[in-house]
Length: 178
Image (cartoon, rainbow, N blue to C red):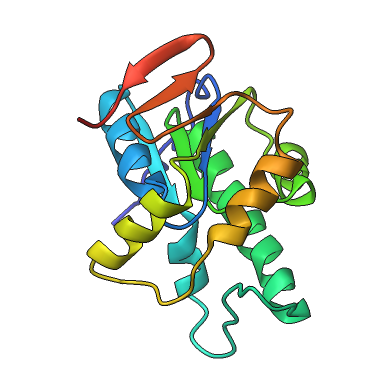
């Protein structure tokens, strides 16, 4: 039996979207809804890449942890590789990740080769995020409110902050969830 090569890549996607915010801000929900509304798209959940580390995984925490910080950039690098692969195949990648530091955002900007990169910051506020974290299946015990303050301070010069009822892509507001 002869295998015929299949062309995987085609006309590249016209950019990528990075949805960010603190845990409970609605990233995964909005990313999935946005991806579902685009013609050809792929939702890249960066937390799922962290879960692929079977032994030695270090999730970020409020306390300083050099290994957890290294793994944040490892998963971001893998997310960029995956997103670029989808983009080369014509799918608009919609990534969701907790990005609260300028250095982390700059890493995405320089590592992701798909351009333009549209950045959407979901910021419903710590009380709303905490309530959502407690209501979901994977309820978090950590209060991530300090990340909100860090995100607002370090990323204040970025695109407008929005709650998770709408996202801004370029100058158009697209309703994603009710």
